[in-house]
Length: 389
Ligand code: SF4
Ligand code: SF4
Image (cartoon, rainbow, N blue to C red; front, side, top):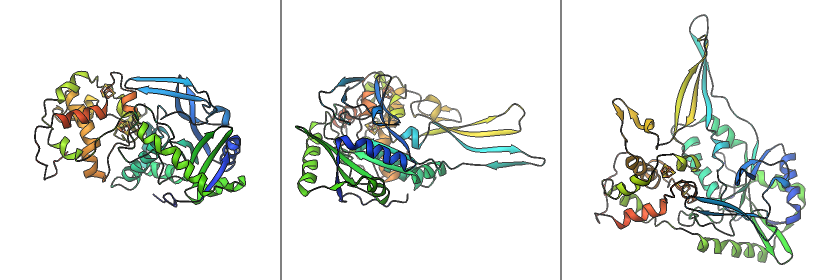
């Protein structure tokens, strides 16, 4: 992906808390469709933001395994909540998309597509874990062997405004996955919200030229060294506050050598194969294609749809499914995320956002399952050769 970001360490400015509407207006004036956190159906999700009154000001959330509750805060924080129920995935990699269209002609047929999506999208309030997930999708969907042209065109027109975390939720573990609580790369602007006595302001770090041009109209004062340090001091406790952690040391080999561990029966008995975890996961990208024709047979469309490795049909090959039990499907999901992604993409498939824990209807917890497999590890010897997926 084209990237003019400075990978952290950029210039810092101060934005007064009361001036956030000016930043929002500046983004909209620059022609962006603005997407940010908003309350919908009792949860905070990313949706269209027309003004600051759409933001969930003074709101927070409590997240636990299988539990999500919104609550009121006692302060006026603009971004005083944890991860949104969904990530940026539905915007950058929509649940359905036309891959190509075939039209019958006098002789043969013509094929068009895929089409580019050049909508300028700005995302406000992106948590560092979600930023990390976008960078992982860039590797897979833009820079990988099978690039997705529509994804690339969307990403080329994206403005990412991160908000560093100064508090952490019970299901968060991004510190373990080195994806937070501070945004370190890939952002256009990164903001840290500070509320102290009567002071309420943001320390804004410039990450790219695109980010700089959005704030250039606001006449912001430069941040002092002390204000930048103060922002870092606010972020640090979030790492210790995280309700969960995942020991990643040697996790690939632990999972690979325990493919036949009887412990998988335990999670297999609890998992409903509902697929919620894959839908909310910001990095899961598995999809299927469907060919649809009109009644006359003159037009046909190939449509890409999100799929899930928890669907029985997902692994259907000649003769049936190769993963016929919930146990096999859960094992595939976690082993792919935490082990085989390293082989395929050179990165973990998990950024520690905790959504799969919060939104699992039976509260299955990826950190607890990874820990349990380590505890039940039958073999101590490290795996020397890569195992085929
Ligand atoms: S596996 Fe779970 S915690 Fe990790 S990125 Fe996906 S949803 Fe977030
Ligand atoms: S782990 Fe939970 S969310 Fe995922 S498929 Fe099983 S029951 Fe559904």
